[in-house]
Amino acid sequence: MNAKFENLFDAGIELGSLLREEHSELISDAQIGCIMPNGVPVALGIESVVGARDLFGIHLSRTLETAVLDSGFVADFDAGRVEGRRVILVDDGVETGTAAIVCGEWLKSLGVLELVLAVPVCPRTAMNRLQFLFSSIVTVQAPLGARSLAWHYLDFDVIDHESAIALLDARSRALGQ
Image 1 (cartoon, rainbow, N blue to C red):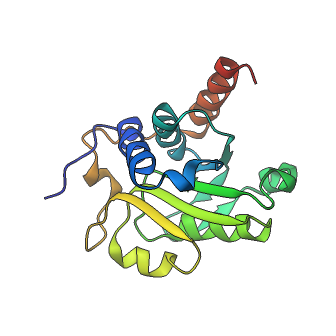
Image 2: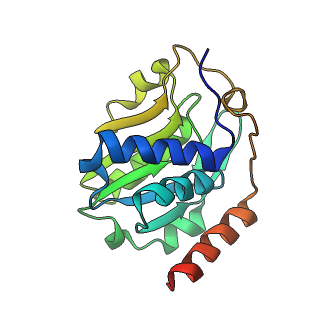
């Protein structure tokens, strides 16, 4: 049985430790793009270990079968921010990989030089689909098959979109940005 994460922030701390200890070359100059809303606390946990990064939220609408980028967010996003750079895409985990693929393909279309996926949980079945889009997949847990993400957390403290924006705003204020 896999160990469970306390919550989303705790999962980010574990993921940040893994990035720092085993993949330091990936985080040296990377930006972090976190899939909204649950990727935000994970990304903040990563930052608590590796230090502040250029961090941005990716606004995505999800249903059980699909994931779609928010058109207003895409229209307002400055592509020059990521063009020619390394981006680490962060979320609360992967079940099927749909959200990671939508966001990864969009980032690649903006000219990202290297795209890394960093998630607390990524089943090996999903890794097979994702390995062609991402140069690296960093995960704490890689179970054989997919389960609900909530199964991997003691407190799957999902947040809503407004709470994720508030967390990013509070982070920016704390950093003086």
